[in-house]
Image 1 (cartoon, rainbow, N blue to C red):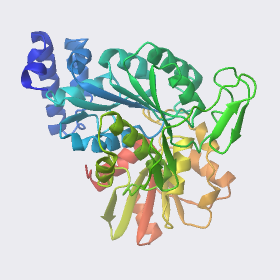
Image 2 (image 1 turned 180 degrees about the vertical axis):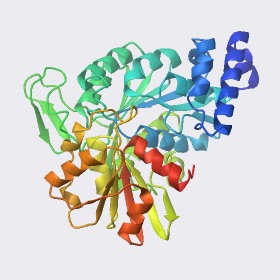
Image 3 (image 1 turned 90 degrees about the horizontal axis):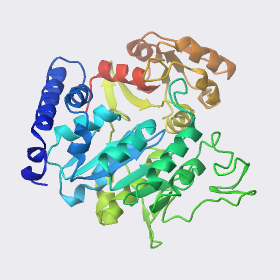
Length: 416
């Protein structure tokens, strides 16, 4: 995409909106009020309500959505597309609503490619606005139920939007029944066996409501016959199997099965763009941290690693990658987290028994009651440094939900 086909070809009012929005984002960053990934888009859209559609025109866009893994998968897809040698626009820090997408495209006006994370509720509108080449559907589970729609309603909206987008290729997780149902009416689907460890939100058939029968990762409905679709890409242990049946080891710097699943999805997207799988895998190995997730820093003589988990499905995966070290758990209930903390009772904390556990965050007492019910001994702390001092260990694992995680990132210093 050259200059004549990007911002320069926009209507004058849209060019002004993009420029003013970009200036506002720069001022926000210089003033220390965040990275400017939202305010620039907000101002641009007020001046030009269809700015996102105008900025998206002529680009090849990938939209990534799901309850968990959006930010990491967005980063991995961007890496996997690296061998194309083209600039890629991306909302790498998770500003995933309309303003965030607008800001991301404004910051990279000449990028011919864009990989954009999208909040689950906004996928129908963002599909219409950006006319993407690929839409990635990762998973669906309960999250922030005080502000988000019931997941079956979200699945229905996804399904309707994708059925009306015949030129879109969908890359979907076939192991999640709700995701599979959402994608099943799309004109082009690449099915990925990415796994689904958290199943408490998908025991019923999304097609008829009957109980699903499961055999390992396979699933089917005994009433209407709806079943898991045949897959092209498969994650099995530490290996990925491509559509021609060739198995290759997945060697990632990012820990855990969930990230291996995200990587397989990224490879499927790269393949849709014609990237050689070997070249894409080489790029994936270079991703070591994603918007602060998995960052390791030294503080007060202790190695501190930051992990993010926002809901029961995310905590299930995060608890699996904890190193055998003391752990600080922190939960807030601000707007981005969701005000309702009842989801804590869906997480099994018994696996933390036998290690030093510290509890912080604005809703530390909610978490304390939950740990007490699971008979997990803990100590309350008021800060990261207090937990480090009380642990007195060479390393400390920190597991926090969204705003608590961002507070810890600010304390240790942003590394990205």
